[in-house]
Amino acid sequence: MGTQETHSTDPAPTTPAGRAALDAILSSPSTTLVALDFDGTLAPIVENPEDARAHPDALPALTALAPKVAAVAVITGRPAEVAVRNGGFAGAEGLEHLAVLGHYGAERWEARTGKITAPAPHPGVAAVRAELPDVLDKAAGRWPGVWVEEKGGRAVAVHTRRATEPQAAFDALREPLTDLAGRHGLIVEPGRLVLELRPPGMDKGVALLDHVRETGAESVLYAGDDLGDLPAFAAVERLRSEGVPGLLVCSGSTEVAELAARADLVVDGPAGVVRLLRELGGQLG
Figure (tube, rainbow, N blue to C red):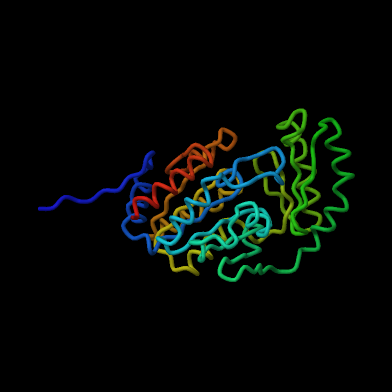
């Protein structure tokens, strides 16, 4: 009588569902979707988001792994063009089946065409941008260092990481920014010391489910680090209830304990994510 083959990574998933998903991924990689957040997952969090770049070993790890799985997707709140540039994805050999789903899935860049498809911008974004300086003057005057990031005309993000009291500024701004967004048909997406005002209807969970269906994936790995990744975690949990194995990976951060608590595997930030991707690629031969 033969022995059953087992699969593992170092570190290993800590939950039965995670271990079952890893086994399914390694047993049948050609039916697996690997989906990843960008900032905080493939790229370290930095003070100025414009300076964010993928971990130096991320691209080699992805190009080694991607040809062995059904598909790879980067799902990010950034504009797709920015994530492609900052990740160095364009023209990378081995990533021909990569899709970058920007603005939480509202935009799409495909490596095989190099083109971006997207709907027209929501008119509420321009209206919010016009009113935002007055709202910030009234609400954030006590915290120098709060600043606004434009996201390609499709969203606006207010960052408090540089403020004198980052968490206090974040907490104080959440209500007035939610009111502002609501007046113009937008929602507020909270993150790690950032509040993003964007159109409703798309989130990383919707984007992930759509991509699973499109690719026909029969197992999925999703890695993220922030509150915006919770919908994707929920999507994987839904897929599990439908019989699709899913591995939830948290790119570890003490700032988002809820994500770590729901993960099957917590790794040490982008370096840990890269190590996991590299190890998976190596195990797949």
